Amino acid sequence: MSDLRDPMLNGRLTRDGIRIHAPEDFEGMRIAGRLAAEILDQVGPLVVPGATTAELDDFVRGRVEAAGAVSATIGYKGYQHASCISVNHVVCHGIPGEKVLAEGDILNIDVTVIVDGWFGDSSRMYAAGTAPRKAVRLMQVTHDALMRGIAAVRPGNTFGDIGAAIQAFAEGHRMSVVREFCGHGLGRVFHAPPNVLHFGRPGRGAVLEEGMFFTIEPMINLGRPETKVLADDWTAVTRDKSLSAQYEHAVGVTAEGCEIFTLSPQGLYDGAFRDG
Ligand code: MF3
Ligand code: CO
Ligand code: CO
Image 1 (cartoon, protein in one colour):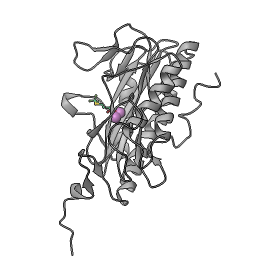
Image 2 (cartoon, rainbow, N blue to C red):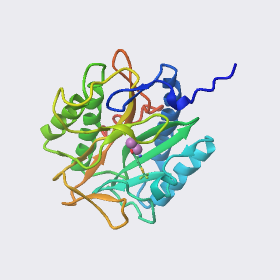
Image 3 (cartoon, protein in one colour):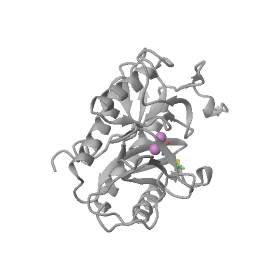
Image 4 (cartoon, rainbow, N blue to C red):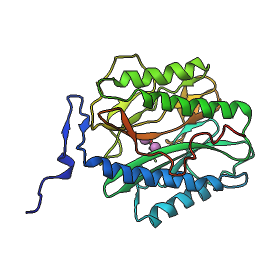
């Protein structure tokens, strides 16, 4: 007997419109998340002074194709690239191009792939050569802020708990949290409810339930939090031109806490800037 049910209808929606996925849906997210993370591992050695962001994007596109996967960003709202590459004071949605990386530049590479209909979305920071101390500190704090947010993911906690954990950590290091961009529900769609804010108050917002899939992707600035979008309608930058960093993981809520779908297969994402 064939199953005629629409797979999109698997699970149910909460009253906030958040999809509760079935246990068997985790495997699809694992596979998609692993591919995004693997590509982020592989692109690292190409991030050197003299490289262009277009070269990095070409590599990402090639890896997506070689895996037989689909880039979620090519054709998304008219975007034409397999990655977003956001250098120095670019907060997010930097467009790959002829920009040549200089010694000490820091950059976020954000990759979203579709494998068997499931979306894998992750981003990390890289440095071209040796980054200045303050930039290394910004990257460390941003990564650790993401992990504090992830540590708050468990059934019964709220989305406000996640945002509050990130905000308290970042502001405790005298850095600021970008307000205009947020994480999002993920699954068989790219951007689903809820908006996952990276600031907030404990106990506020929707209650987390087993089977929710979403991203957490804090953008943290060394200076003020305000951003603006450039005339290309994509590139978001800090208004005060201070450095900005971002890390993104896709997670699924489990009975115990959460599963991170986008951990580095090579274990590279953590500590990359700690020993230099
Ligand atoms: N990957 C981004 C996110 O984390 C979205 C990029 S959309 C694009 O949600 F069109 F700019 F690529
Ligand atoms: Co995302
Ligand atoms: Co992303």
